[in-house]
Length: 155
Ligand code: ZN
Image 1 (cartoon, protein in one colour):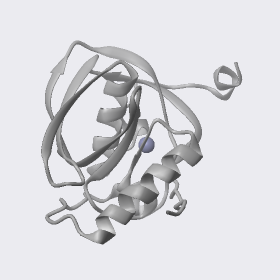
Image 2 (image 1 turned 90 degrees about the vertical axis):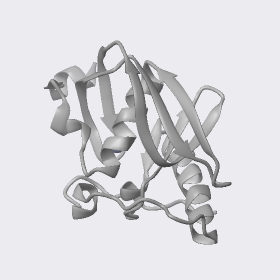
Image 3 (image 1 turned 120 degrees about the horizontal axis):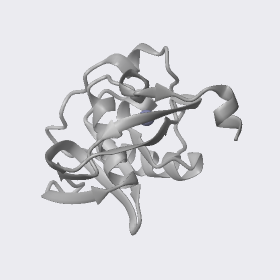
Image 4 (image 1 turned 30 degrees about the horizontal axis):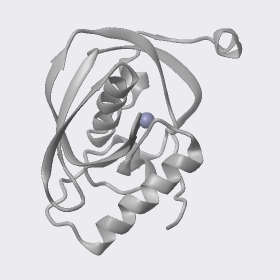
């Protein structure tokens, strides 16, 4: 396993649309392992493959009972709404309020090639939306209703 370098805003990789995974190869397994390790090391809530320079539809999200790996994730159901604080490992020291669904169900593939669904609320729901946005080249700063001022961040 290895800790990968996280690319920052301004890197063109973050603005590209990622390609679906068509086959689970040893390279994909390695990437999933490395992304998990990188997520833990960076203390983030989630990490998408383009953030480590790989244009594939893969994300890892740190949920309450462990990290969930999402390959080719799609949002299939949403419920309610929330306006909460969001940040991003690729946009350091910037925080903003986003408008997201309160509850999100995602369908994805796991590393065994099996399709599963997972539902997240609150932070997990924001994280699912945020990571899937990354796979389409969107950053949370594009959607933020408001970006916090440096004074607000300091508090
Ligand atoms: Zn992010």
